[in-house]
Length: 443
View 1 (cartoon, rainbow, N blue to C red):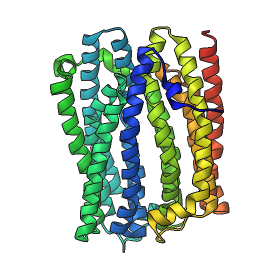
View 2 (view 1 turned 60 degrees about the vertical axis):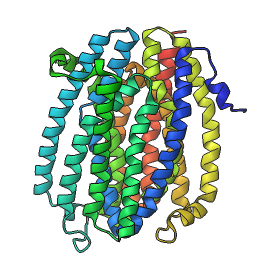
View 3 (view 1 turned 180 degrees about the horizontal axis):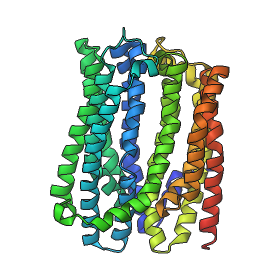
């Protein structure tokens, strides 16, 4: 099948034209972001070593919870702002943003305190099988990382606004600026011979916070001052409206994070934190293709919200068909990466980490499954059709831990990845079924 990216995005439709421009810009930005992420792996390994790098991967997986502790308000805001802007209701948009900002600020501050208290009273070292010889201050590092990440989340609101305005390239630019600054910081630590997990945690968390504060200021004081959050714009009823939809996103996000985060914790508990590193190296290599696909997919979320409110169902169906054609190209790329994986690992991380070919194959299958599922789910997210996704994702989150533990004991790291493939398969099938049911009936 001939897959032509230009044809894929060619249209006189203004919505598609906006997507085309954002995809083109995002490919450049995300391409650099991918390079940054790939470079961060070896430089972090050089700074920390295999064991402490595994510990840091555990911290990173735990920090992903923060992205879901806003009760889904970020994604709820994204859909509401897109809806209001489609109807040209500027004042409602401003009130919605103000309500979300102050609600998230209060919520994140409370969560930071609660999590800090919990960490202080839990025996983390025993729970995660951590050797205190390598890191005696793991609890303190966790508290610092959680608190700073909570504050970062508050100022990431500007990114949600850009996504709602169908400008994902700007949101991507904000994120990659922070990642690039982190990379420079890590290389500086390596050049100075600093191998402290404390300092690495500061670089990884404080730098993105500063980046998002600057982006927040530029967005609401210079670019869109008419949308600037204010206490006067806070509306109690908007909290309910945002949470009504956002709570579903929240449950979806939490379930997804349980599925992702549990793997690192299970590996650490069954083996040692050192075994987390080869698993994460394979994961980052193959999900790089997922990140590239998301460059194309991300604009369709808010554009679908816009199209659905304007009853432009034909645009939604045709856009989804074009996306499906890209799956053939993704499949070919994954096969090529599997065949070249041993060479890529040797160039990328040297001989410090050994990743079995079998794990690479499993990770490629898992990545393709995620891409297939999200090809449908992003359109469903755009119209708030989340019920079927919600049930299947919760099911996966409940089943994944016992299944991964069993298969991890039986098949090692491969078994844990296979468990992820098994629990996510029903949801991928259900997303396709739901999309066909919702949109085919409109034609």
